[in-house]
Length: 142
Image (tube, rainbow, N blue to C red; front, side):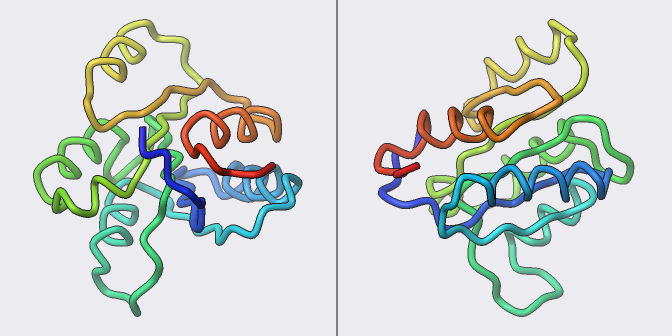
């Protein structure tokens, strides 16, 4: 748990543009001053966090990571994240795994991964985002 004073940036990682769009609407409904970025797979998310191939963007405080994606799925992302992302960056990022599946193995695997802060099942809502933000960001005023 980061317990950051302020949540500045959220990275939505889902291969479904409609889900990213809908989730950004839910976050905006919370009327927070937060930047929302999106990636369509784990590789794009990893590149975003590492600042590859782009102008320097703000490091996301929270990553909402879908498990089932092409190119690089959520679990492959987590392995690369562990291996490639410097600790000083990991200490600033809260990762929430998101899936439509109710697969118990995924939940157990998420619970045993030290970089996964939480696990949420789709469909998400503004209330889901509100609860996750309040849980992981101690001074997040919503």
